[in-house]
Length: 301
Figure 1 (cartoon, helix red, strand yellow):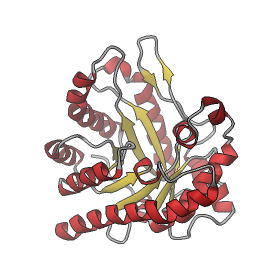
Figure 2: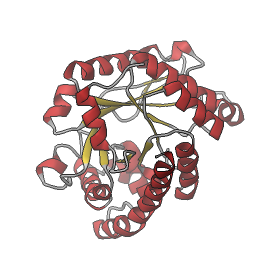
Figure 3: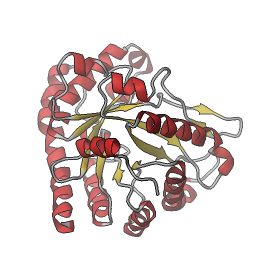
């Protein structure tokens, strides 16, 4: 198992709260955020990167300032939130390396992409505490993963060379022609085996989809060993995610890196509406998640 260096451990400590658990606000989405801000494709196309940057700045100022860390992208949000003084000095910054969307192979597999010119050195130059890479994995189809594993290996080696923290995330996906029922039944094993692939590549901190069951969470924890893992929200509703967080924490998770479940119905092209909802609805949801995390951290202590 690959252990964090002293510098990486310091970065990890900074993305965690005082209780030692990760509590990061994810808002590195681009295409997905456009679809939440406008339902009409033509209106979505008129939403510029600067407009997305406005929304991300508000999420950072009003929501992420109440958490230990924020995850942002280097196209719309960074370096803006640093240069304009939006980012709280006590809030750590993870910078996403993955480009929005994906390519598709001739066999229908998702091929992950990187934001051009963003590497470990550039993340450091932008003021990042660390980076985050997300790739798509279908662990039951080895041929689906060669391109994406190569990206993982590239990024992990680059951040190791720079001695900078890197959070590794993967997502599974339903194949064309695969029934929803068959795919859902495979999710626990896909996440477990995707975790194994990530660890074999040298991941030191993991951001994972909810594995599906308490037993699956416990297996992930056993497999990960000393490598901490955070559960992501995948945009499920808040009450559902609260239950998932509770089960994950009860079975060894080290925290949460969550986005849409907190803010998806709070963002708006009307910034006054957006700011009010972030201050009230989103922060209230965050407090509930923090309470669940704190409860299990106290029990673990």
